[in-house]
Image 1: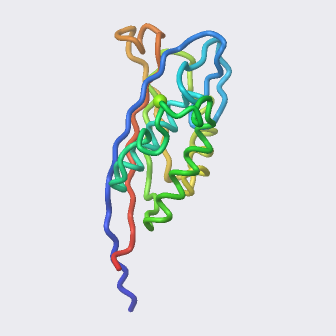
Image 2: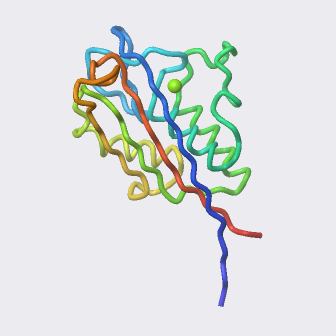
Length: 166
Ligand code: MG
């Protein structure tokens, strides 16, 4: 009998970006049709930023600023899907695999229900796990705070990683 043992680590990530005109709304590598988009360095994909921070946290590898400092012009308008691929390479290097990810998108608008499946599929592909291992929830904030007043979209993500004990 083969007795495989794993070690497990959780990580959490959050992000928030301001909603502004003349920017695309990218969430989890999916372009969402909406009159406003997220402002920020790179493409401001708050889902992928939170997921990357959760992955790095679980792996004990710091945060996205460690890998992609916003003072470095190389990452200006960077494609967050490409940055996620780089973080994925770090996980492979350290032998981590994703068990699951749970993502909450805090947004008053647009309504994200029609896009949840696409976002799950996209994120699952980028972090090299099955669709079933990625869950996406969308929550409004009842008109309260910056999210509730449609000034921003925020994201909370948690992941579980595992690797074989040598
Ligand atoms: Mg961000």
